[in-house]
Amino acid sequence: MFAPAYLDHNATTPLDERVLAVMLPFLQERCGNPSSRHEYGRKTRDAIDRARQQVAAAVNAHPTEVVFTSGGSEANNLFLKGAAVCLKPGCIAIGASEHPSVRQPARQLQALGWECIELPIDAQGLLAQEATAGLIQRRRPSIVSVMLAHNETGVINDVLTLAKSVRAAGGYLHADGVQALGKMRLDFRELGVQGLSLSSHKVYGPLGAGALVLDKRVELQAQIEGGGQERGLRSGTENVAAIVGFGMACELLVSDLNAQIARMASLRERLEQGMSRLGATIFSHEVLRLPNTSFFAFTGIDGETLVGKLDRAGFAVASGSACSSANPEPSRTLLAMGVAPELARAAVRVSVGRNTQQAEIDGFLLALGQTMSDLKHLTAMAV
Image 1: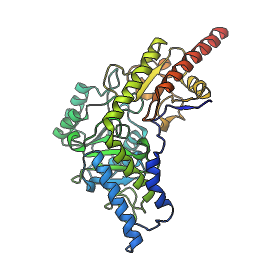
Image 2: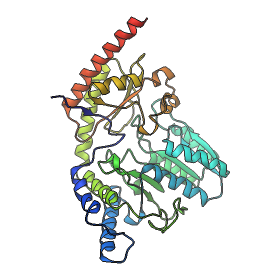
Image 3: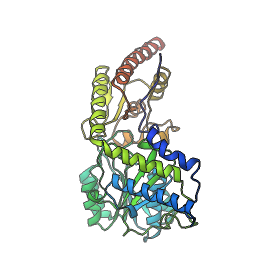
Image 4: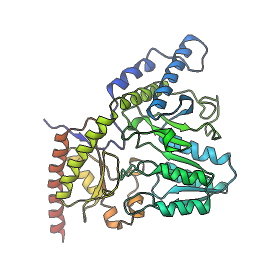
């Protein structure tokens, strides 16, 4: 019997049944507003407090440092815009391959008198350390924001070293940790950052929940005003069910993180060995990457076309970031790495998850080989 295979976990993950189980009461009988003083309200407030502890434990933070948001994009906006309003306009620095939820707010701050500069990346997609350190020393940005782990290539930046440069320049460092959570060990204390963005739906939790882990010495202005929830940093009645689910997802990921990392890395190795035999170019393969992510291309084969063909064969993969999938242009990240536009336009991403099976990888490689053969045959006929 045909069963489609989901290989796009960096876009979103399936909801864990154990997460759903703890959410259901808050979608049905447990209806109290967390701000209410009666017993119904107190019980939902207790549930949020427990979830805050679970999220904090996953990244070695204190529960009071966790500010719940609607997801990673809001967390990124909250830090960048919230910090900028509380500072004298100066320089903000972002990585050349940042997510739109960092890049666009940084550009918007230019209207408030901020100067935005980009930190270069090298041919493997990592922040170019010497060039970045030099820029930070010369320009002394007040705010720096970079991805901890990249959503397309999977590369893991050396944020700890970057934090030392930013601290010496007197700035704040924010890390987008959305893709890193659940795929590598995270320690808010060790990273040396002032803000860390997280998202629930990347770790088998529900859509619509995320968090900004915030050093309490950093002053932010709320971007959503109203009732003063989340220490006055994010007003609005909390999405209790989603927050509770996020907390449980974090508790579950911590329980077997090392085993999951090893398992996903083994699947990726099998995948990339097979793709190499088919002639794929695998991006960023020379540096440390997330264990589940592979970004590759075949010369002369359009990425969107390949994704569509594989979808019809029963394999869900991506041509890049889900948040920018409507943009037909080549990956900004690959262009910044110096990849030729034609090859960048061919890029496809496979991201495995905790439930991915070896048989699915083998089936994908068979389908990929057949699809490549078909596309090359069509191309030859058209010439």
